[in-house]
Length: 389
Image: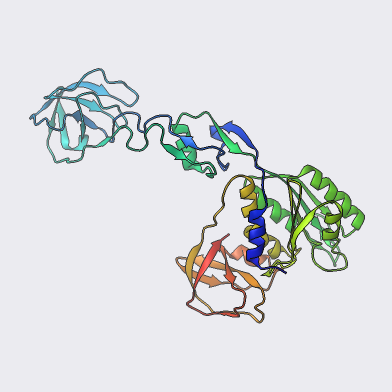
């Protein structure tokens, strides 16, 4: 059994080999940039009006101004503004030569082709060329996760296609003779399979492709066949169940027979102690316990960051400080424990939680907190760190 920190070190040092591809700018949401993006132009590309009004020279103190042109957005001005003149301009319009200020419409009166300023407006009301970005500036760095705001920036650069990292293809296998797929009748001693569905949902939430999802009874020959098949078609294989020390926990032995190198098996963590991690060439294998909370938590703590790294992104989970509203205790402290909580406005509310089979507790939670190894009590009022889920 190794500490969590040691497992994280092993995962971090395991090499990954992300490939790249080009996708249309409109399809790059949720992808990870595989190149640095430099600005192809000044932003804004010209001096433009920040609001509707009249473009004048800031030193012009005329009593009234002759309107020589009307400038909507997308129109190139034809007139140069002289003292005693102005151009009526709309928000986003290109400011004409000779003007360096826009007087907002609300402090003006227009009559018979003339404009008069009747109120105070000390602001220039301009967006100056290049004030956001200059041509050649680094806009977005390689490894950036593309959100809607990054899509907007990429489009504003005029980029039709974007180079991104490829997403790995994931195979999922749930093991156990007791498992029945939802929608099928079950006998008294059986349970419905939830782990393959939760793992697939967590994988898909990252935009990653689930290549195949399988379910196999505790039979060595069936397991060997299915594991070999999934290894052949997947970049990442996630296995739920069959990794502990019971008589029917065949997975670690079969994986080694199939040429998988096991880097660790058993962590000082709760839930999820029997977790295993291995590789075969460039392929990655995670084995997680069959209890549903274990499966969920191990994915969040270990598998999700690794998948992001395979896609070229250095995933850093959001961590929220909060005050514990109720004392937490436990009898044993040999392992780091993670427990579900509800976080709201800086307060952390522990939830009824009966252990690693209590998947319903996670539906009430929006975060997890760590119960450090060696500690049996976290007192009410303690400042803790919440990892949102």
